Image (tube, rainbow over all chains, first blue to last red; front, side, top):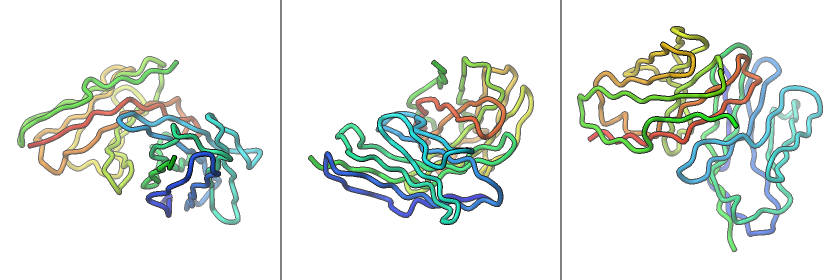
Length: 113
Length: 113
């Protein structure tokens, strides 16, 4: 069965500092990987996704993520965070067929002024 | 823009009541999903549907049923609501194939008293 681990429940970062959110997955074949963001009281919005090709993918809002097969990781990065980036971030993995995604438990990002 | 709408943002029901949560998407997506979101547990898949009148159980289907009579509408039914079903419920839709991103509605926060 596929699974996703986000080791950090909470992360606090100063505004303007760089950010890396960790995600490790378990999946037997080539995974489809996603990062979603959820602002307070909102649904989830896709930041970026990987399913083939270049292992460094660019997303919206200045985010990027790197797929590393050898480490089973898909970490999310941003060079300089803004106060509006405070939110819950979810990593997810999908497989073949129409199955729903398997989500990690989320990382809550707090931005310090 | 893809739009996924959910009938209520907040809902309060009593134990034993039958509860209907409605979800409508406007992009002719084949797949539709229901998740519940709980603090510290992330998102968990309840049911999904890949076509009209077709449904598949997700990870936590107990206590829930679904209905998809029209392609654009996917309903989640709590036959007899219980307090442990107090949660945030998120609906999502996507084109066929799990490499496609899922688009989420804003969520319904259900409280069962």
